[in-house]
Image 1 (spheres, one colour):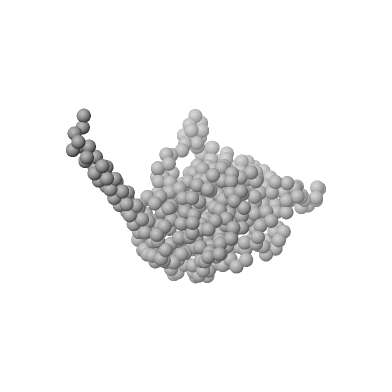
Image 2 (cartoon, one colour):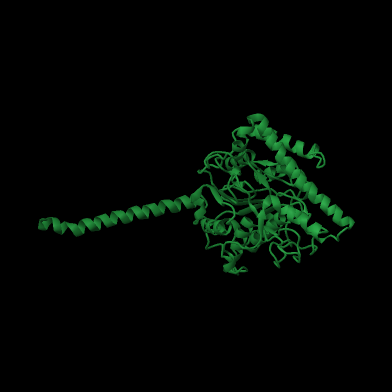
Amino acid sequence: MMSSSYVSLVPFLLLLLTALMMAAVSESRRSFQEILLQSGGVAATDGTQWAVLVAGSSGYYNYRHQADVCHAYQILKENGLKDENIIVFMYDDIAENEENPTKGIIINKPNGPDVYHGVPKDYTGDETTAANLYAVLLGNKTALSGGSGKVLNSGPNDHVFFYYTDHGSTGLVCMPVGDYIYANDLMNVLKQMEKAKKYMNMVIYIESCESGSMLQGLLPKDMGIYATTASNANESSWGYYCPDDPSAKYDTCLGDLYSIAWMEDSDAHNLGTETLRDQYLTVKKRTNLSHVMQYGNMALSEAFLSTYMGQSPKKVSSVPLDELSPSNSLAVPQRDADLIFFQRQVQKAPKGSVESAEAQKTLDEQMARRSHADRSINQIVNHLFGDSNAASILTAVRPEEQPVVDDWDCLKTFVSLHDLLINYTFDPYIF
């Protein structure tokens, strides 16, 4: 039986324990807010917002990538970012293309608004190179070749949003002209930016096949960068709003599933009340055909979208919230999206016409090129490892915490040889 003196101490002890617990919680909250403040999180409102938007393809059959970038620009512009702080890379061969049924207009969804108007043409045509992109990110005007001359003039208090959309493969993504962007080269640029204090924090969104391979095992968790990708390191991302019947006005996919998901979510919400983590979870749910990934400094995901994308004082939703759900519109793997365009050219051409024959030849060449590439890779693997190991070598996947490549120079050499093989020895009637 407890003594009366011990019982009388119980309320005091409970009160003391509660106070200690509350103090610990308060200290935890204070520390977390400090982390966010130091890392550009919820409490960080000072500094300039910058954005670099990159469409890595050309050609009307790749319509969706430039449409994605144009839509992203409209979101940033609507939410207060200035043109002087938005830098756009796009080949710019879509709006006035002879295949475009609405000349001078680009849309990102069926019956959607024009997203092309007002988009800065900073780096177009032959200026859309990896070298120019690196120069822009590093703020190095002397390294530029053509273009508007705009670079990231950002500083240690600024926030940078970097969005890329196009094709990719393991450890690389494409640019319209010149060399690929390799994951190790991009990471070196990001580290140089950090060393030069080009940002307080940075957010990266990447849309491409195997886009996770650009960051997996490479982006440190203690850098001021938070990133999400459309897929993991070994799967396709998906084209979206693709033509699904013969009467469709456009013969090509209008957007990409991951990109549409984050942009329509941004259209539908006040960016000052939704966090990066909120958007990641929404996009992950809607992008139900690939695994949306996140990398880097997870603490930064608690920042509001407005920290990087701006915030309109009169935000009006333009997208019904019920659209932000798992998609049932036509989606196709990125690498097959161009085939839809070529197939529709065959279907639309009058039977027996010259146009029909040319369209069929183009489609046949595309299919033969793919078969040739597959056979070439299989033959290389068989030669190096033997028939018995070929299947396992081609399907082997590294753990998520490891980079997909150890020897990047070896990868670059292999890719260069592969491109030479495909582009210079290809003859669909021989192979």
